[in-house]
Image 1 (cartoon, rainbow, N blue to C red):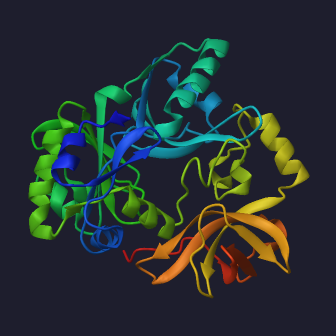
Image 2: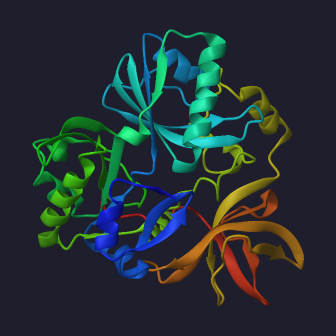
Length: 363
């Protein structure tokens, strides 16, 4: 398994380490529920160094990204982050990635860990085909990434950076320092809480981790693993690539229609237009269990003894004290308040479709 620059720190903290997409990653340090609640009440620090980073530089960097990605980036300002989708020729989602506009001729793409190579290959093939005047470089191995998430995140990080975090807007970033080291700080995350993503050189990210661990003690901050990250993101209605999203799924079948700008050309548009015109047959929805049991990935969704879908994510929500999940269902069953059933091992659990997200923080 690949190891992040922080692997030894996780071992020293006696974290439980698992294989996550070929990476040795901490799933928990104490237990998932405790780490989840700490994030909602105070703050948690996550090692996200396994994520991918790709630089796109040159006079036609924007032209390449406009062609490769579904979202219109023409109005993106320097210092702004935008979520977009990268599609295959069939209109399926290769990745949902974030685009950082560093300058007019320099963009940073932040990819999911398991799609890093396929993202690079897809965008590079478009670059080779269109011969845009720009170049790409995968800088993932040289880049470290931390997520500091929770209501105390700003207070903790402000102790270590000269950047004025009060003025940093959501989905914007600044180039500054953390613990005296050069870093990119973006106000973004994957938990539904306020928080920051911090990028720095891979050989320095351990020093920033140590600084944040120390600075966070007074605020009750603790490190958290992938287990809590998963329950937090699910409460926030966020999807997991490779589980809720695959290359067989289009943006129209999940809550990503808003990422598609039909007024421009992009890779996969022809196929996606055909999907739109013939109408989708299934849709990803949120559901809450009204009966006993917890739905898990791969469980069947049933109505009147007929299979109508499949659960993609499911867990017990520590915040809501309910079992929740995401599932693809036939479009006829996708409206909120629709009653459905889940085949949980040898029993049938009752559930109801709800509007996403399950949890929304109080601002």
